[in-house]
Image (tube, rainbow over all chains, first blue to last red; front, side, top):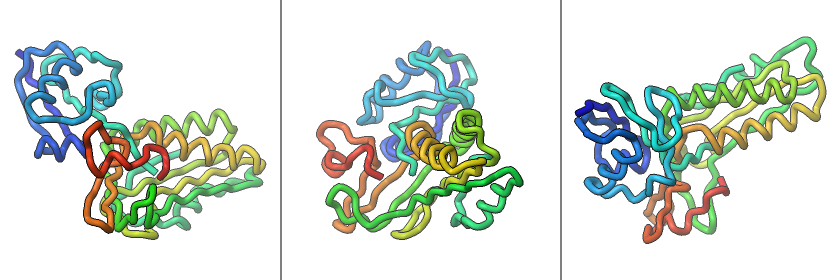
Length: 80
Length: 152
């Protein structure tokens, strides 16, 4: 089991109802973890519409995770 | 060469002061404002949210790319977060270069890349009452289905 820290922004924050959480998971990568969370929390965006950042930097899918990592799932951006 | 996220209103003049350079013959700036409509819907206000740490990292990468590509002498940009009203400035970009061509081109490059790459999100609040996170529509969503991706 790994302990991961997740921060949520924008549509994911609203759908999760929390800005962050710490959880234990057996997922080996961020893509698999997102798909589990999606089932639990009803996230509407499919994983292929997201990017992911681990410990403050973008990572390519499926983005392997290690114990203690900080994850942010990044919905389609819309600055400007 | 700096990009930053600001929770406070943008002051364009104090931003522009950092662009001063003795070799500069051109300064181009861009301001993005909150407008009252999008794709046929009347917009009441906009809410911006950022993953500030990575937004500043990625934003500064864009500034560095622009500086190299267009041989800029100075560049700066700032993006607001929070709940903005119609007419407020959401983003400011400024560059200085020896000549006007690279200055205009760099300004356009920076705003286009900021919009495409930096983790900032925008929620439109409509006069009719609904709201939607832009670009986050999925099949079956109601308000978001009609919200366009590229028109902001």
